[in-house]
Length: 318
Ligand SMILES: *Cc1c(COP(=O)(O)O)cnc(C)c1O
Image (cartoon, rainbow, N blue to C red):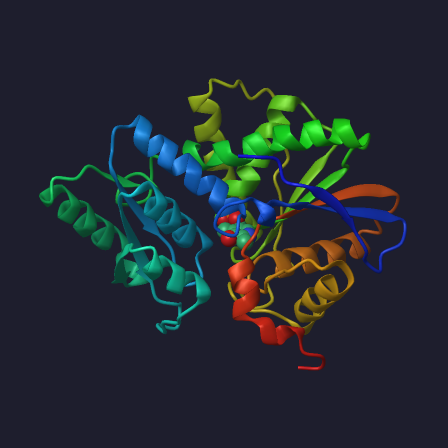
């Protein structure tokens, strides 16, 4: 994976230099954290001698799209198991169109019956003589936690090199946090680099902080076990749940205004589910905590197809 640029951006906060790492500009499938994480899953599938990818994600999922797209250019078989929204409805998105276009086998499932759905797809693959690989490990979603963490442990190293090159030090790294895979990777990198004077702050897009922190701990433990890293001192796990705006996929006027002004003033697309919520939450956090004279890095985790799903958010006063 090549390096992605870090650019400075204009906001209405004085005394703060806010930079954005444009991981949305990775040169494959609209980039983003899921393009990197999908690559890690495929590498692991190859290492384990499996040949049939099974992913899981809802209609908005950038991971499902990245998994389906990597598969379509490799020329293999990919299954996507997809739950309906919490209210039982199903939507069509830019990402779900691309999953279908890439020829992935699509399986609808109920959110309460994921294990059964995973098991039945695994059996179907085996009956067809394939060796299935489920991204999250066993049918209950356990056992593969170390793999996705690798992606952003590498990115952390990339950021260290870029700091060196730019002659600056980031005091804070912010990002939108969902499953916790990305934040765990950054924290693993920080742990290895023994960088104590820096905060990595996840703006939660779905879960309450306590719940998210547990999940991240679990990822970190799996990664350090795999890499035989002795954790002398646990990195502080910071997850902010003040900006959930009603839950996953929901957004507020503040998020909408942030998306519009980031596009108008910086030419940077953000979406209302992840990056717009994360960027808005970061600005609010910085204001609330009176943070001044600091270098701030926001990780643009991608999701550009979602920006176009909600392009009407750019309309003034809507
Ligand atoms: C999945 C996703 C996130 C959240 O990353 P996690 O590793 O799941 O915490 C953030 N931004 C975008 C665009 C995503 O697709």
